[in-house]
Image (cartoon, rainbow, N blue to C red; front, side, top):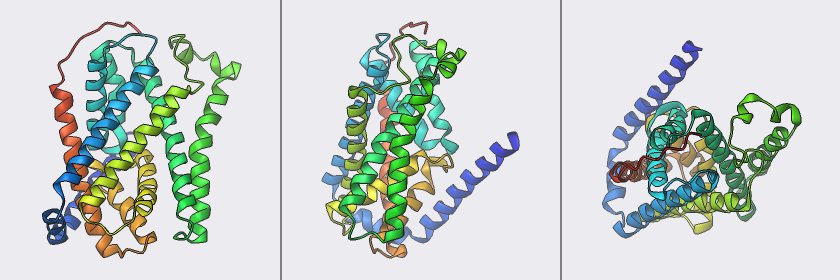
Length: 302
């Protein structure tokens, strides 16, 4: 087990080193893109990114409706969770949510873990919907083999969360000790309309963030092309192998999407690196905002 973790950690560091080396070799292209970037669109991108985390805070408030926690506290938790999730390798930053809920609001790790699981299942449903929609509107650009792949991925992203909830309703599974320790008002085995709608708008604003960054860097793509590119990029956020600061995942997703849209890998790589730097700045600012939000301790004992 330890050996596997060390191997995964080594892969993450290798991805980071590779991206740094590529960035150094492409630094002239990247710097030129930023020199020509439109500040208004970069600011709009950060505004959309911030709205995305306000919506994540509302979703967290809906999920833990069994106990009242201040919006300010949950916003701090959401911002710090987003920061750790992006910068820490191997998706280990995701585990910060249960820890932050315990530290900031005294939730048990079991409840915090259940909340994290449900948020990820809701994210999968939204991402599946976006990928399916983007595929339908980009049929002319997609080769048949890609079309089949995207349809299968879309169906899996949507159906797997519902299959899991169906399993959780089975009496043998519902009686597990882990589930019995959850508050009675917390429904891990179903998705409410409010949770689903909030998740949809969360990822819509993530997409708007990427659209603003792409537009700011004057990347020659239409809105539908950017929508398709975003739909390909976002599911990569669920892959367990991740470099530090999302190194490798971001570049791979964008270069793959650019190649499907007819942009050469050489040009696509420069765009991918420049957009990655912009996103890193957004996440860093998000972390600063999270740290600046005053702490307000509330005891929940769940």
